[in-house]
Length: 403
Image (cartoon, rainbow, N blue to C red; front, side, top):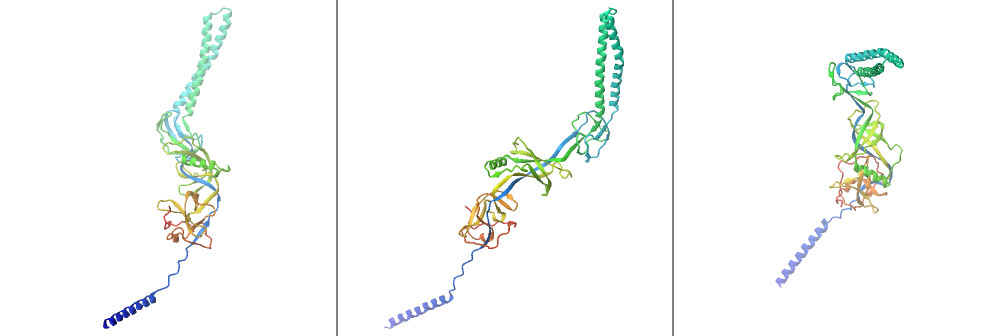
């Protein structure tokens, strides 16, 4: 009896202890936390736009015309008659070569010509007189033949001396080395007192015409083929107005105000670079452009009637560098679209594939979505997104890597 009473007492104590533990656990229980609100984002709705597409091509300027000044006669340089680096006009005398030997040669040829012309009258009279006497047989046939031959000889001598006079006069004129074109002349390779030879390989100076001026830029054949396919496929339209107008951007990034004209595209491909040269001509009245400057030429490609543009804030890249955009689907959830980008236009990207008209692209709130996965419900802000902002320095990535 005593044993049974002890067991019952132990059971009662254990039951009381269990009830105490349950009471204490109930007192420490707290209500569950409220559900986290859906993140708020700003979106833009994709709408097709009419966009004029252009391409920036790097290149360098080159002179419109270049003339290397070389002497056409040999002699001593008496005087340099220009200032290095100045503007010269066509026909302006640049160098004076010693003309004394050439003047003497001209005087000698003129004297010989005068002597031959003086003897011409006497020899002609003798030949005519012998011709009359030959009919009466007063002179022999041989005498007449000799007189006629002498007349022809003196006539040939006169023509020869005339040619020598002309040659000497031309050589005398070449002692004044003149500018063949107008432009800016560079430094001189000779000084006063230097000896030069006719048509020497070293130029005395070089003149470059820089108004207008050329801008030569290479374009890859891949780009040419791509442009041709887009035109033939109907994605691009050539309006024909101002299609050959091009613009220039200087090496410091400032635009060059006058427009240029796309003159021609080279017909041969450079095998080392796989590109062709596009040549444009620009007016340069103030001499801002110098030969050899690095420039960028903006070439107009055509008009895309239904271009899809998305702000740069709305485009991010995954660890592989592939571009993507986050959208809000019809159920109000975040989605992911992989993109194919064509080019940058201002503060937007031209999208070639991946988005369709009507898509809502998230452009603000990506920092919040960085912690979420695609498919998470989001709330679109009532305040519309103001375009023109700048893209964040570090583009966020979604929690689920794009696949």
